[in-house]
Image 1: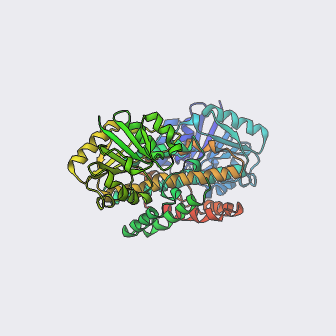
Image 2: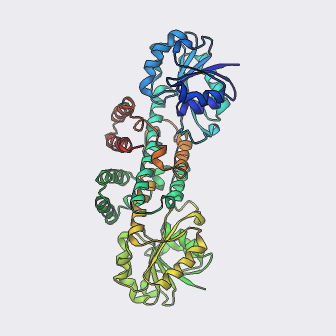
Length: 258
Length: 258
């Protein structure tokens, strides 16, 4: 059975290792802090290591699941111990070229999803974006991916980068907007739960229509009275930081043709 | 059976009139453009009128479902023809005081949801925020609301305004973020559908956790390499308009303590 190694034990590593362990042997996990990763390693029956040189040279695939900033440093030091292993990273925005500068058999295994430790991932519906330097490795990644998800795609680094950038808006920034909403109602002693149906309906709507065609609200209606009122209210709440965000996003909505 | 009149035949008016017609008689709908509203009136068996003086003086409730900007003009001209009728509006941000300046029996019936003509509303889960000048009218609105929804609340105009402001962030601005994501992938020839699972998971997560506790992404990780890369990419795409939004929302996420 194929043997997989991991670098990292964060959210993506934990979820992905757990999913892959249903089909393959997750043999080793490299972490800097052994103690923190022990429960994950135990649950997978994997060996925890904290030196690259302890990696088994017969690993079939090694998955780098660390922050983008750390990827280059990892591959630079890792390659000598795993010369024949396919080494992939899981990042949306780091190009395959970063890996290719140091190693030959390289690729990308990017799950387009938001990962939280406390939540299960619905892998079947999660798009997996793959890329590899060699065609045989691409095929190997496709087989791995198909065991997890019904939505497997081959995209190059430029396309993946645009998807990651889009994902920042669709996920990170929409969550930032939810959080601002949370802060506003919280400050007024109103329950955030009242906004849950609206949040869910807005998201569902965006998956069934082109988002700007179902845009609603005062900015869309060009209702300047309400736009001004909200600005005044944010100022009165001493949330000058939100006045600018409110104005910019309202402008964006107003500018968008129907 | 209680007789209800409507002012307006837009999204809120259409959905609300259709829902209330299951329990009450929607007797009359005032619109400026009779032709456009004919299908709605036909489906409800309601009379279409385009002059306030044609309103039946025995209407129990008249619901003003027009843009916030138009509410004051409507109540000012309407009151003389419906002196004994409870007149309510459906707006989140217009105070009850605007109605009280012109009419005695006034109130608010605000559904906290986003309405699109092409989508059904799940009324049972939609919060309905009520307010009335007189207690007897408040009670009447509560009875009406309870027929539609399991989530009926009495809130004053200040609380309702804060909910509406929060809703602009949670709904209008998250949809603006979805739309920006749509534009980005579209420009790169990538399918927006790939982002659907992410959008849905992000929304679901925000209804089960406090949003900032489940925030993810480069701004949260303070991954300056990626933040800069995305800025460069937006500039290369000639989307300077998005650079500022990206920077501001990233800053907001970075500033938020864990």
